[in-house]
Length: 80
Image (cartoon, rainbow, N blue to C red):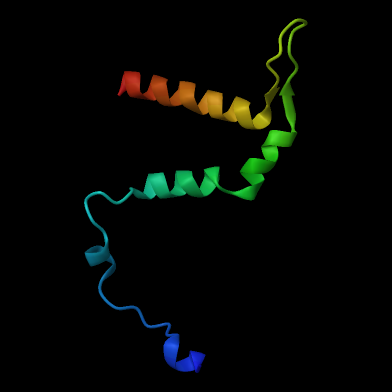
């Protein structure tokens, strides 16, 4: 098999022609890149908040960041 014949760096079509109404926005693509990145995932091993005695809920930096983002998104939606 000759890979040089099969592989090409040439793109066909326009970028705008590839985008459709249901495609994600640039913000959504950036958000997904962040969520799926390894530095973001490494936050799950970092303790952020220690639980109170009798509580089984331990917050790490990952869960804390997700909760803060959720609250911020809700507040932003309420004032917009």
